Amino acid sequence: MHVPDEPYDGLLLVAFGGPESPDEVQPFLDRVTANRPIPPERLAEVADRYQSVGGRSPLNGRLRKLLGAVSDRLIERSIDLPVFWGNRNAPPLLADTVAAMHDAGVHRALAWIASPFASYSTCRQYQEDLAMARAAMGSSAPTIHPIRRHHDHPLLVAAAADRLAEALDQLPSSRRDRAHLLFSAHSIPTGLSATCDYVAQLHDLAGLVADQVDPEGHHVREVVWQSRSGSPQVPWLEPDVGDRIEALAATGVEAVVVSPIGFPVENFEIAWDLDVEAAERAKIADVAFQRAEAVDDDPRFAEMIVELVIERLDHREERAAAGSLGLWPDACPADCCPAPGIPKPGAATR
Image 1 (cartoon, rainbow, N blue to C red):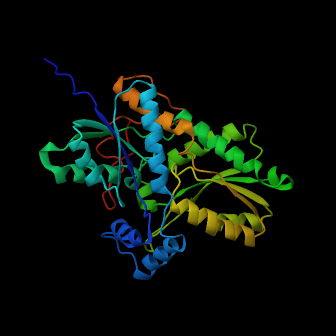
Image 2 (cartoon, rainbow, N blue to C red):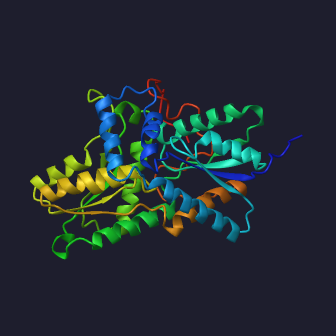
Image 3 (cartoon, one colour):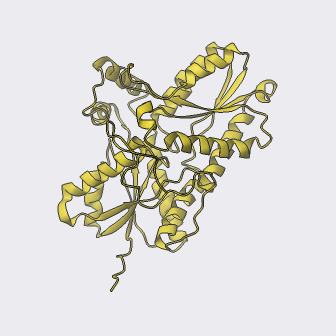
């Protein structure tokens, strides 16, 4: 006889994390770079960037607000589901949050990961971190099931499109009509990108957002990359956003708008790599520059998370998706998004 699954009784928001004071910068960077051959001078450079803004990333503050917004919307929908938050690399750390969930009586939880894209670093690595956090508790740890990848959810698309349209409107009117639309995401090694749907999903989302903002296709649009790290001998996804702005300037382009669609939640990489470095390179090249805001504080973003929760609670067969790649399954295929150095026999199967 089939025994029904125990109902879900908790929701965990899972994020990368960021420091919130100068004293937290080095421990944060140590966690991020653990077991990675990062040159000391590169690590010191990144630490100096954080210290130049008071050692504070915007990410944790945005997650606190998101937690409150999601909690409020669950209450509005009469869904009794306590919401928790844990980070990979900064307090509140996942192991501590999983322990708090246990202490609160949670037995079986859903987990929303703060990136909708499928790759090792944006999906599977978070699942490995969740497994380690549960293992630290032993057999009493709550069961935790991640929510599906959802790069093309209509509410995400609509929020990102509105933020891009707002940024486009802020350009000087004399340059607005000829602006290029650049969709930026975190670069990853090309060897990793070949084992997952990360690039395809980003292009899919970029096209969906651009089509809402510019349905007649007046603006050139393309995907660019940022925030690469690691050995210069290892190929990473290109072009870099700053390099691309300079190349466009050389062809006569006078304005760009950058939409950070690879980062749904505002974070330090957006603030530094786009607002500081890319903006400065655009200024030097005499290119008008605007950056679209991240979407995490748009009410539709919290509503999207709640919708993703409800589709699991209700076992919905019909699910919201606007793109061309098909729905991602609730449970990732065993061979998808392998860790670096692990070959993958074929594309992920849906």
